[in-house]
Length: 191
Image (cartoon, rainbow, N blue to C red; front, top):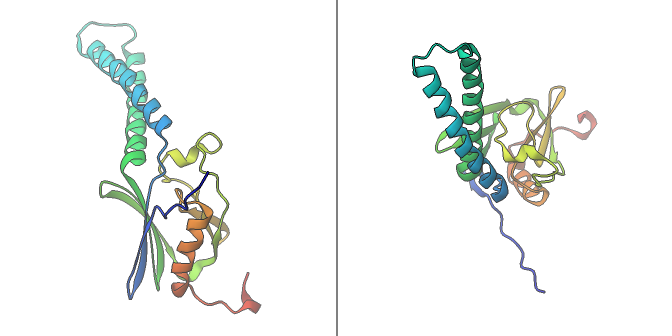
């Protein structure tokens, strides 16, 4: 059996003042189908609870239904965001002479995390398993915490992880593209 080499799933745009990498989210068809089916049930539960609350019937369980509906609605929002991330999401990594920025974006709407480049140390690859069954974080957008991904760096006393949908080989190519912006620390002072 002949196996062809795969192409990168990301694009690199190198300019005079910055380099930007656009990485599509990792797609897991099982996860997308499962959450999509779950959303059908979610919709039925949501509309049923809303009908119960707006029917005007004085129900002894009204308070419980209101709290349940609030939690159920948050669960639905999480599911929609997760599917949107899976289908339409991008992680955009941009480096210039002053900062390294990670943008998590779906349809142009996103969140930026910007790190001062002078505080970024030891940009490196971090072995990472993209299997949703062994690491379910990859199925969701990396919005909170230090992140997860194939690229890591020290930032103060924390290790930060970016490049959630990359594998180690892709991460090496991105790090190589970022090298010209990284401050050169003499080996005697490297931590």
